[in-house]
Image (cartoon, rainbow, N blue to C red; front, top):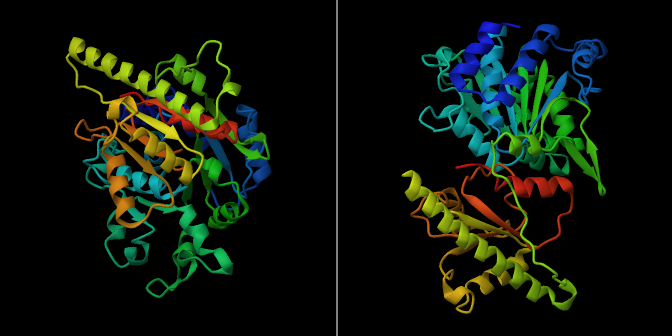
Amino acid sequence: MNNQKVNNIKNRLSLRLPQEQSLNILADLADRLSLKKNPDLSAELAQVNTLYPTCKDFERNFPSICFALATGVGKTRLMGAFISYLYTAKGIKNFFVLAPNITIYEKLIAEFSDTSHPKYVFKGIAEFVTNQPRVITGENYENARQTTMFNSEVHINVFNISKLNAETRGGNVPRIKRLAECIGESYFAYLSGLPDLVLLMDESHHYRADRGMEVINELNPVLGLELTATPQIEKGTKPVKFKNVVYEYSLSKAIRDGFVKEPTVATRKNFDPERYSNEELDRIKLEDGVRIHEDTKVALDIYSRDNKTRLVKPFVLVVAKDVKHAAEIKKTISSRTFFNGNYVDKVMEIHSAQSGEEKDENVAKLLSLESPENAIEIVIHVNMLKEGWDVTNLYTIIPLRASASSTLTEQTIGRGLRLP
């Protein structure tokens, strides 16, 4: 392990303890693994398993290890630390970052490429100040070889696997695998032929389905680095844990160490739900949740005044069953009989059935929810905001649908755990 390189990166990026521990593990394993194409997987696994017994199988056709860090600890910054170390200590120059959906995809592009972004992942890394990594995306890769791509030593390819999977439906070949005349091969073939390609998988629990696994295995990287807050997949009603975890920092540890908010559950004493209809139960939960929200607003206002800090504007997330249910909830909250009509113009809904101008307006509202100028205080969603939505001012979650799995439960709670 190159301790000097590790310590430099820790200090420059101000890593938290779980991020530091993860970087230490990567640096240790980078010295022990071959970091070459088509290695002896059994020998590589033995190296990892001896030091980290929780890793019993790579579960890929290449060495792949998983870092399970709770939501809010900083997985994207950790990816920046991983790339910085592998480049400065091992000379690796080619990286492929995989996102599970458009929200996380756009977030990763911004945080890897925009030096003015408050969460730019390489801030402070001296090697990247004058020679910034070139970020290649699903939109510009076809022209990348014809532009100044090779002016930068480090190339970070960021792609959205849901788009790749969508392009393969009906037996079609995804665009990335089609011949690019300027390079004489497909961009996918070019990537898979690189001798030092390292694959980073954000929210890696998404990449266990057959099509996703097939695409990833074909890339044939020298190393896979997986990051997720939920190192498991659901088979029926049973969670199946990953077999390649080398480090786990659970939600309970993150709460204990003060990296996230401490969640509590609001209940009513001696409450009998059998006495009420579904509609009445929804209204009771909404009213209880909004009362907590109003108490939270007062508490945050007092905190801001006492500590002379900026005022945090909290909001409420309501989890609806489906699109129709979401519309009914919005109608209830928007009525003059709900808290005297105080939330008529402060509620919005977001779901996959929205499109065009309506969708664009709602996305814009979501992106500015932390701003005091944004009037929205209640967001109703249908299975849309589980991951990759890094708001820090969500304090109250009202679930009006049963959770299908423990993974979904943790993801939903995780939306509200980030600290301002």
